[in-house]
Every structure is written in structure tokens, then in C-alpha cells.
Length: 174
Image (cartoon, rainbow, N blue to C red):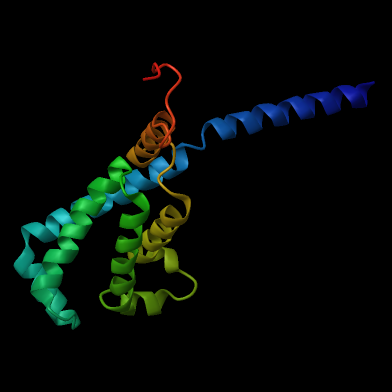
């Protein structure tokens, strides 16, 4: 009898924990997007305010067309950060921003990366951002996002549009 009671308590406790975790799953992509989005918004904003310095830094790193790349990367980080905050185009912007982190790892952070490899890679901020971005590419924006809202509205609109040659039941026949 006592073993049955313990088994029931464990089963109920497990159910409560499972339901609680499931109800909080929306938070993982939301918090990831917020942290990464804010980071890129501010770095992009700083680079846009100092384009000459950014272009000079890119030139020192050997990045081709430093002025054009400074404008492109600064704008991508700024607008990509905003879009990540909103959850708009999350997979696309995460993929694009991932490529900028790869370039950062092989140029600006190369020495730091090699000095930390393999034990302390989490000390390299561009590596950590790359991991978060890859996760967002694979997982998506999550439930609390414009991506999800747009998908929901598009699906609803598609269901409301009758197929060619058919009529909606509420419309009278002509």
C-alpha cells in the first residue's frame, strides 16, 4: 500500500513538473532572441555611428572593400538585431548574422580563439553568439514572435480562401 502511495506521488509530481516545463518552453527562444538581438542592435548602432573607424578596422583585418563591408555589416547587425528582438525573419537574420560571426572568428577574434581552444571557447563572445544564432536557425523564433503571428495569419487566410471553381457555403448560388 505504501509503495503504491509513493508511486502515485512520484507520478503526480512528475506530471506537474512536466506540465510546468512545457508551459515555459516559449521562454527559451524568446530570451535567446532578446539577448542576441540587443547585442547586435547595439554593436550595429555603434558601428553605424563610427563608420570610418569600422572601415579602418576592417581594412586592418584585411577584409576586402572595407568601406562597403562596414556599411553592410553595420546595417545587418543593427536591423538584424531589431528583427531578432521582434522575432521577424528570425531564421534568415540568424543565418546571416552567423556568417558575420564566422568572419569575426577567423579575423578579429582569431588569436583569442586559438588561445582559448578547445577548453575555454565560451570566453570568446563571437563563438557564443554563433552558437545562439545556430540554435535560432534550427529552432526558429518560438511562440512569442512576429514570425509565428505572420504564419498563423497566413494559414488562417489560406483556409478562408475558397479553391477555384468552388463557392463558400454562405454565398448564394448565381
